[in-house]
Length: 261
Image (cartoon, rainbow, N blue to C red; front, side, top):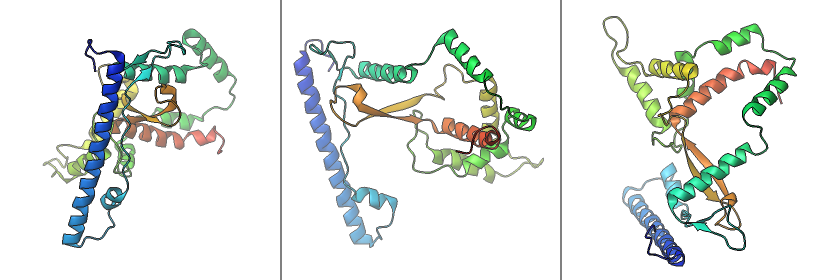
């Protein structure tokens, strides 16, 4: 689709043809999956109670590939379209980034606005609550979150799901202790040290720890307009585990200054 010799109309036709082929392949894949499942149930007399059975028996919708997006700055009477995937990704990133900043002051004006609002708040945290928030995370805080993490959630950009972190934690607990009564590797302790370092010094710029994978899902109207897509952000599991840990920490302190509703 990046061939400079192709005309824009030819690129659009090729893109639509590829989309149709992808749809046909997904339908074929779903049909094959159903056939395999039916054969397995027939041969092994399996009971249809698993999540896999329920998912496989459900009609699967084909994924919508974005073939092109209208360039927002282009005139409505002569719209320009972007076909390259990296350029379309940049259009989407800029649109959602600008959407979040819309109506917000930036730079010094933002700092002045925040200071003005904060100075009008009379309710303050108690000294004990301040101390609790300032206290570094403990191994107990981490294990409190790791256990209830849900399975079957989509991973982030690193591709590692919750199940891996939970398995690693349980695996570390099963390692025999040394002569001093200490485990050679304590995963929860390691994660505690990493999270406290992040809270104190921030995230390394070269790290993808806080990056996410954005999936635009078409909701209505013209498919060429990025505004008609609802974004879903897939974040890394270790990042979400940290936010859950901090959220639990906040729930024990902020009720004294925030109304229950």
